[in-house]
Image (cartoon, one colour):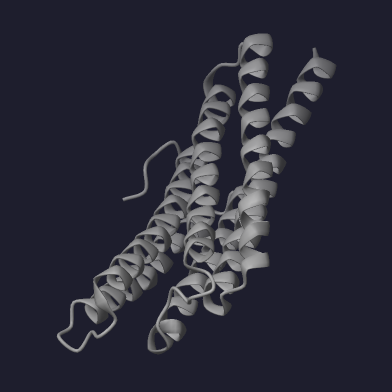
Length: 217
């Protein structure tokens, strides 16, 4: 029985490690897609688009593995909660990869023209940095199950919300001179980064629930 439990624990640890790997993959993806966006780097954008398929594959394989574990081991209580929570976290992380992919696709669509006007590049770059930092922190939260850090992720998201409001303020200002098409692009970008951060918060909340059995207030 002890050996069976040890094997099961190894499988649970493997699931957790794959979630950490996924977090690191989406962190690298949003970093590269932001670089592609700011520098109008088509090659980098194409890399992000291609690498999103790897993120999807890892997530799909993880979900299939989790379902297989549940079918074989028939876990109960905290073990079942961990596996079901892992399924939900993998979906959030895959969606974060999709949002990074959307940023890269917008860069490719507008190339060789820049998507972001010069005066907004610093702001958008800041949003990309916040997104990257959030996803890196999420990887640590998953690995360590640090509930204090999990709560901090939600506070960090406030910075992204503030940047998002600032971005929208620029395009709704009477001084905006870049036209409707550019305003739509910037609105989409703001939404992509804001949603990326929201999914990071969702993952951290799930870790908090996994550890405490209660939802973060």
